[in-house]
Amino acid sequence: MASLTADAVVIGAGPNGLVAACVLADAGWDVVVVEAADDVGGAVRSAEVVPGHVHDLFSSFYPLSAASPVLARLDLAAHGLTWRQAPAVMAHLVEPADAPAAVLHRDALDTAAGLEAEHPGDGDAWLRLVDHWNRIRDPLLDALFTPLPAPVPLARLLARMSPSETLWTARLATLPVHRLGQELFGGQGGRLLLAGNAAHSDVPTVGALSGVLGWLLAMLGQDVGFPVPEGGSGRLSAALASRAAAAGTRIVTGARAERVVVRGGRALGVVCADGTAVRARRAVLATCPAPTLYRQLLAPGDVPAGVVAALRHFEWDTPTVKANWSLREPVPWRAKAARTAGTVHVGVDMDGLAEWSTALAVGRPTGHTFALVGQPAVADPSRAPGGGESLWAYSHLPRGHDTTRDADALIDRMEALIEAHAPGFRELVVHRFVQRPGDLESADLSLVGGALNGGTAQLHQQLVFRPMPGTGRPETPVERLFLAGAGAHPGGGVHGAAGSQAARAALHGARLGGLPGRALSGLQRALARPSPWDPA
Ligand SMILES: Cc1cc2nc3c(=O)[nH]c(=O)nc-3n(C[C@H](O)[C@H](O)[C@H](O)COP(=O)(O)OP(=O)(O)OC[C@H]3O[C@@H](n4cnc5c(N)ncnc54)[C@H](O)[C@@H]3O)c2cc1C
Image (tube, rainbow, N blue to C red; front, top):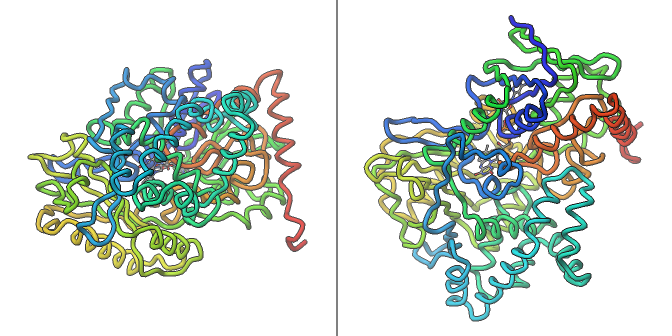
């Protein structure tokens, strides 16, 4: 049992926790990170499961990392990170299994040529979309990665567009991707590139916000690719941990935070399950999901009644099921273009995606299967020996229909889907392991019930509604306590923004004898109220 003291204690050594530690330590704070697992990385870890086969255990491709101004500032290349790119970014396969794939190439002209061949005019439509993205991407990414209300990047963003362009861009931000695709493209290809990317989130493709999510990921893919770290996703976490340690951070693994100690409405430190206590002179940053923080780590008496009431409206994203196969050869996709893509979307077309994603959102089993498939060795041959592959696929179950049996049936469907599109795939398997929702949660406590986003990405839990109606900022109603993980604004994905924003909020809050921090916590307390229609 250790007793430590630091300026700040960070709960969780996933990407957000490690980024938060870097930002605080760079500002001269003394930082301790406590991590429940035996190694760092959270949902950014890999392992050599079979000799020579390095499998990404959770996340796998990192457009958000490559584009993140937060990570760019950390110079992770100096800490051993090397990005690798597949020849093509992604492909979307639909029935029949030998139908041409929609392909996002590294070069926008190549993507456009493929779309144009399918439907005249779609190539130009793609290039116009890319032009618009190129004009606004820097201030847009800054606005996303700055705590709300982000007035400076927002002003820069508005300055890049005429009033009418601003209106159209705002409209795009509200559109369902199903509709956006119909407005932009005559053929299936362009529509699928947007909608397949939107389906990385749990927003139904007929729901508001799915348009902008699909657009953002597709444009990032066109811009920076879907890169993978050479040697496995764990190399990204190793680089982050090395960067944090170089700045002076102490990381304690195998230490599950059990309680955040609060006195007089102020967070004073963390006590871990093994008895390790870390006193925090200035701040506690929690990267766990909001319900975990408020319902488990804080004593009931330290949580304002308004937060308890607001949390009743909190919605998790859907349980994830992942299967992994070590292959002796690459996947023999019928659609040849898919052999060069790092990521493959497989299973359903636009209507199928609409039905699949809506069924998931309403909690109903569906006959459709949509799988995200990753073949990282296409970008990084070091992932598998002898030209093989360390393949994975994941999909989701509706909440409430996520038993072991449901998960195994979904794994069978994903496997059958890959076999249908790549006959002979099953014969190439030398090893298989699966991760059901419970397995994901036991490996990373933040993946509650297999939710990979810290809560739904739907509009009603984004921006000032994330994780509950409030300021959309990292401050909590408890002074000196900050939400720093994927459950906080701007949400999931490996970009480090939530961690960086929490660290900056802590630094800012500690100025002037802690006055700004007290004011912003007070504002969160004032906003944490039951809805007018909640029972009294
Ligand atoms: C299967 C899967 C695939 C994904 N694919 C991608 C992808 O390809 N690209 C992408 O950008 N994103 C992807 N994501 C999402 C991305 O990985 C997450 O959004 C991101 O890792 C969130 O970072 P985080 O630091 O907030 O949380 P995490 O990475 O989940 O880390 C949280 C850490 O906190 C620790 N922790 C939790 N509670 C406690 C506690 N009480 N005490 C101590 N430690 C604690 C956990 O053990 C964990 O190490 C994927 C996620 C999953 C699960």
